[in-house]
Length: 256
Image (cartoon, rainbow, N blue to C red; front, side, top):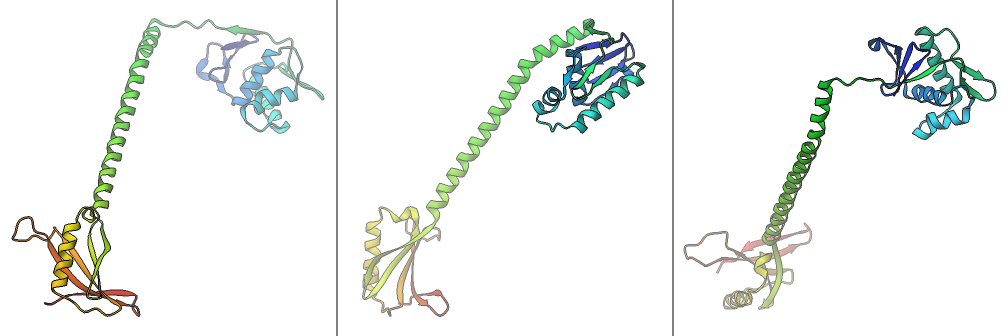
């Protein structure tokens, strides 16, 4: 929206500028509060506008801090710009103890005669057609991003499952000749291996070991160390002792 003030000054509300009609390149920009103040005074042309209404419409409704100092600065700036553009009369009148008003002798005209060139119409039509394309592009990018994120979550989940299955656990599987026997094996191998555990205990029983109170036997089952016989896992037998003075458990292999 544009207003002509006294037929010579053009107030462009869209760009927030004041300038001489016919010389848009020489327009002077004003602040948003100053623009809102001038619009409010134009809407109440020739009427007194209270400071309270100005504070609310210019600052408070926009989440800004209103004060007499801010209001006086905006009025001074508008008066200075209007005077610079050639209006010597007082355009904004101070109403003591009330507020301000736009002088009644100032003429105002709404200027809406904006001619749109043919090329501008074509550009606008192209922009209208481009909106759905841009929206579709945004949806496509969002879909790709969500797909990548979902794939990443699946990969992380598979990795966690594999990692948890590969983590070794220890559990007590029995006692032979006063030696407690623990088995250390991957978590996935801890289930459904009763026969293998019985075979291990039978082997330990056939080769008895002597354990003190702070000692125990630890069996390490591993398929990662290759053997010459296909399908056979390798079992390591260790005797461990709790070295309480060092807060460690010391293990060494058993000799038959």
